[in-house]
Structures are given as structure tokens and as C-alpha cells.
Image 1: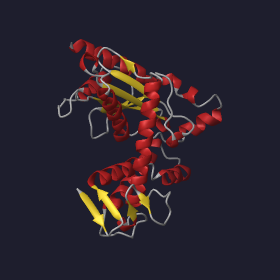
Image 2 (image 1 turned 180 degrees about the vertical axis):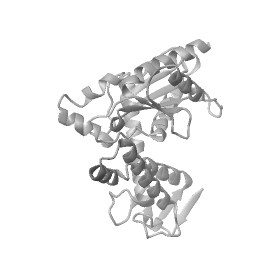
Image 3 (image 1 turned 30 degrees about the horizontal axis):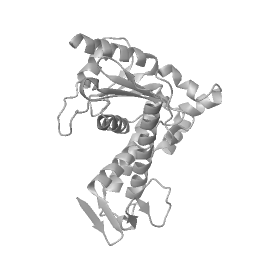
Image 4 (image 1 turned 90 degrees about the vertical axis):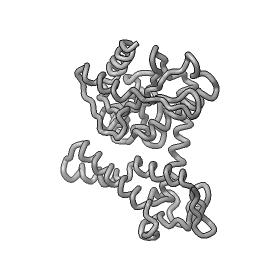
Length: 284
């Protein structure tokens, strides 16, 4: 499906989907959340709610075509193939044009992060699944830097100074979002299926754990990918995540639309991976 506005704009349904998704998961409300913190000493959960609300509003405004022009970046006649906005603030993350730019930046980050994981051999293979940690660095949302294969490597990727630690804790991580992390898992599965390295008896589901410095947690996504195009694979990680959480003392948060997503306290995340392995091992 393709929508054409005038003679300068060509927008496909997939473009629209990627743009709206990017707006939903961007930190559109970061300034408002900081203002809330300064004014009332609010908790991180309250600031997170503010960020989510403003991101949702930005995505919802970008969907509307009847009010084009009332929201910066929403005029679809100024879009050119590839997401370039003609005129205005080209760096603003507003409207559909801003969403397309965010989607392009996210796709670049996915490719760069996947290459880094593969080149450094940072994906660990267990009997029943593969897993990898994705750590934040002082670059925060701009990079989504990677540490070693465990949660303890997170701070070392930033440095030893407390200033850098404070900076890290205040910056969002580009992959600490369920949809972005799922897309990274999909891309990793796709490239390894194409080169034949994760097929046959080498095929394993993938678990990615992305650091979320603001809450001192990790966002965990379990991903099952069909070995052949068109196959349907049931994702078992939802029930296994729940079972792993109930069999250990820790802090867990299940608030995603998908059951295969869980947020785990940093101090409990390695134990969570071990418990998940034991549970899957017991099913054999």
C-alpha cells in the first residue's frame, strides 16, 4: 500500500508503521519528565509515565491527516522519498517526518549493534537458547554501546569516574524498549539464518538483555524465529519467563503487550538467565 500526496511525497504502509513505532519508543517527553523531577521530587516510575504519555501523543498526532499543518512535521506534502523533510527544522522529532528520521536512525543502530555483537562474538550459546547483553555507554541514546557478556561489564564500558556514571544513569538506552530490542533480535536471527550458521541442529531461540540505566534494570526479550520463511513458531518464552520469575526471589516487571518481554533488576538478571536455562533443561 502506497500513499501519494501531491507529486513530492511517496509514503508506503511499512514506512508509516516504522515511523509511528519509532515515535512511540523515542524519548519525546524527556524534558517534561526532567521538569517533573525538579518540581516535585517524583519517582522514576512517574517520570517514565510522563515520557510514555508524550511519546504516545507524538505518535498519535503523526497519524492524523485531517489536522496536517497543526503539528510540526505533520504536513505530508513536504515529505520526499527516503524521509527527507523539505524546509523546517530537519532535526526535530515531530510529526511523520520526524518519525521517519527516527526510524532511519534506529535501523542504522540495529545494523551497527548486530555487527558489533557478531564481530566480538558477544552472543553466548547455551543448550536451549543463545543470549547477549547490550550495555549502555556515556553516549546514551546516540549509540547503544555494548559491554562484555554479562551485566557487570556495564559500568566498565563508561569509565571509572562518578561523573560518567551519573551521566550514564540519566541517559536513555536506545534498545531498552521492547519493539526496538525485538527488531534487533529479528535482524540477528535473519542474518544468521541466511548464512546457515543458526540452522538445523545449530538453531536456537535468542534472548537479548538491554540495560536500562534510569531504573537500574534490564529489558529482556525472548525471540523464537522460524528456520524457514513462512513457518509459524510458538513463542514459549512468555510462560518460561513467568515461571523463572516465580521460582526466584527478585524484582520483575511484566507490563508489555507481549508476554515474552520482562524487566529484571540488574542485580538479579544473571540469575534470571541461569534459572531460565534450568527450566528449559527440565522440559527436555
